Length: 290
Image (tube, rainbow, N blue to C red; front, side, top):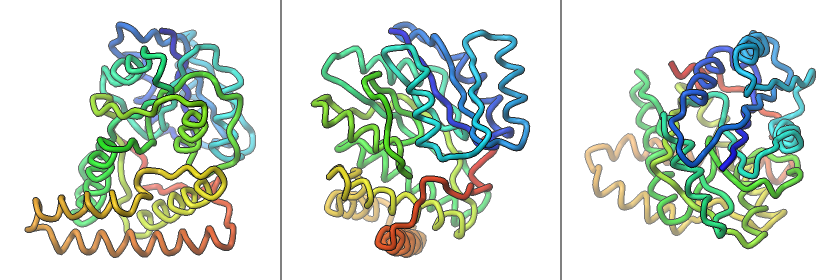
């Protein structure tokens, strides 16, 4: 099973070297990583220099440079155009996969009925107690929801049957919607673990969640595809279950709900006024994983 890995980067000098090492060191049996394509869009830091140094040592690594930042969806389209393998992997540039994550995820696509899979995202701990709780809660809920209905993001693997995707703020769910329309199965693989870093400030959290919610609303209107976290019944059921099991953290939980509600309200306004979130402001506190 040949794999092409795509990494979309914008000013990722703090993590891109760690990520490339993590991909190169993946333990695989079924998955054969044939190429790693980094699309650097308008980077002004040392991202391009770091990737170039890696490519000199390993021919699998290829760098595509966009002089102007046009948005992640446009960068993904460049990857889709260049990737040669039948199975494609997209991993966010500000994440780190566990050593067997790509194998665990891609092996699920050995079934011809499966078109796309996503992994489990675990945020590294922060010393900002409130924000650490909120971020850990967010991804814990995503995990619980994904066990019933996959939520796509950060790390996905899918069949190379897409020529391009439209301009979007929620690219992984956009790809999932296209795969689903082709009649293929969407799966969640919790053993494909990838580490990320959540926002450390309320401002960054609201900005991130606002953009994602607006993107999901736009995707739903255009394609009739809803991310699993847009299912209010499933979300409420999951939150209630979590609350009963963590009653001592009820105050922090209420604060998290309030912040998420504010973010969704602002995202709804952005959707109504048709604000374009496809090129978004980077939340600096979500970067450097190690």
